[in-house]
Amino acid sequence: MKVRYTKMHGTGNQILVVDQRETDALPPGLDRLKELGDDATGPGFDQLMWLTKSADPALAASYRIFNADGSEVEQCGNGVRCVASYLANQPGHPLEFTLQSPAGPIDARVDDDGLVAVSMGAPEFDPAAIPFVAGHRADRYELDVDGLSYDVSAVSMGNPHCVLLVDDVDTAPVETLGPHIETHPRFPEKANVGFMRITGRDSIDLRVFERGVGETAACGTGACAAVVVGQRLGLLDDTVDVSLPGGQLVVSWRGGSEPVWLTGNAETISEGFMDL
Image (cartoon, rainbow, N blue to C red; front, top):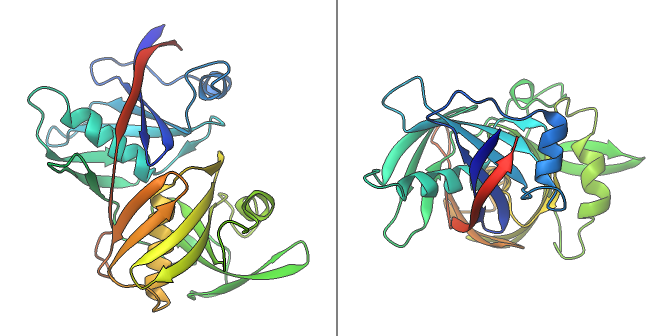
């Protein structure tokens, strides 16, 4: 079975949008997802966003998210921005709407300048909800990795994140430490790992080792996680510019149960067909 796809990127994060709102087709299996995610054997992607019609007619669409290793995940900030941009470019589609994600409803807005803002929900710091193995809730935890201890923060943005403060993202051990923390037993569902350098009260540099993918050019939920951690530590203001290898994002959070807003670009790269 062949289906149409639209390949996009959000801040360099490669996103494949597959619109199946008018069919009952199921996503491909694990092995085929791996082949499609590899640009040597398929269109290639960091995340595949599988769109279906929402059970709630008030919502624009529902989506599922698959990583390049075939694993299904709960949320993807860059992916949902691409979905929002894709839908807003359909004839007659509104520029403000709500989507159903695996982590809950997501409000989206496409601005006149083409940037896309999405509400990523409130952050969750309770260890059991992240999930993260800890005896009590704290802003910082000691995490032992191969005999060394690291100060980290843990938070869920609909998916689990671990955030470390570093002096320089260029020399941070993303490729060596990232996979060890991703699969650390204290993160029973694995974790996205963010390496953050605070450059001012309204700006950070960030690299992210994504769960099931490896380091990517950008991670939207990783940007949200890093900013809310910095805010909880009293180091960042309400609105923060996030500099990632793939470009810039803006994250805003007013604390408490307020949702985190993520704003950035979403660009179409190509369109085509793929065999499921």
